[in-house]
Length: 307
Image 1 (spheres, helix red, strand yellow):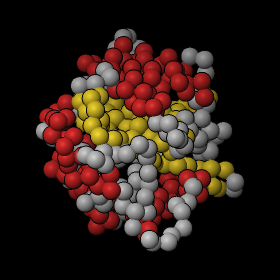
Image 2 (tube, rainbow, N blue to C red):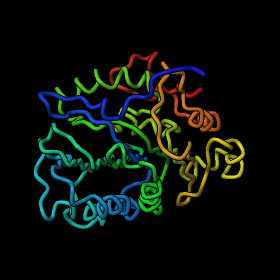
Image 3 (cartoon, rainbow, N blue to C red):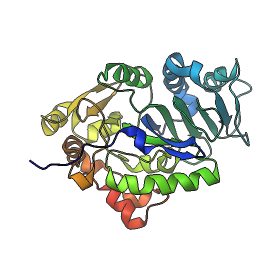
């Protein structure tokens, strides 16, 4: 048997500046949609409500699309998002965006965090919603997190999505962004279970297919049909991974809990690989994506990392 050191704890992936965490590993849930806000408001609002009910009281700072910086979360701040999706008078014109985290300052990020962006200007509507939780949230019992996924996405007009390990940082800060890129770029190439965490870079990529396989890979009804449906997928995934209904779509689960793997230890996450093989024909092309910090060749390698 190969004798290797155990994988490092997730805490070792934190990047600090002057003792303050500016990039932290996390457990994320990401959902993409191409439904217009005017028709999808109830499903979008429920995604936010599922997060708010569990973690809303921990959020400390936020900003919207028309704010230059972050402000403290006030008593009525979190009422703003569901109000937008009601579509009444006073809803902002143009794109909708909301970013919030639980850290002590804008750059000192900490989960829980919430991010969303709805493009209402492009010819094709597109949106992403992201929940960010502490990296150990799945722990030894994944059931609470899975219940959260079902609650958030039961009415969501899902195109596709994923859940697993990622990173949280203040993407709108140029200096922090540069440090984050230097931090995550080599980790993405070594640990296949990580996604970089700048979901905005994938919002249009998702229009072309499945962005990435993860611990949980989420398929909306359109992609679920293209994949052959639950029965066909179940046969292709067994025994390493499972498939179950998720709203009108499907959730593919690669093992009991998320993993990050390590190619240096020949741990390429076999359960994730099985899901990737089953969905390979649905994968979005790498040339429709952008991952800051990776070359074109490295980006193509990352998209094919589970092949």
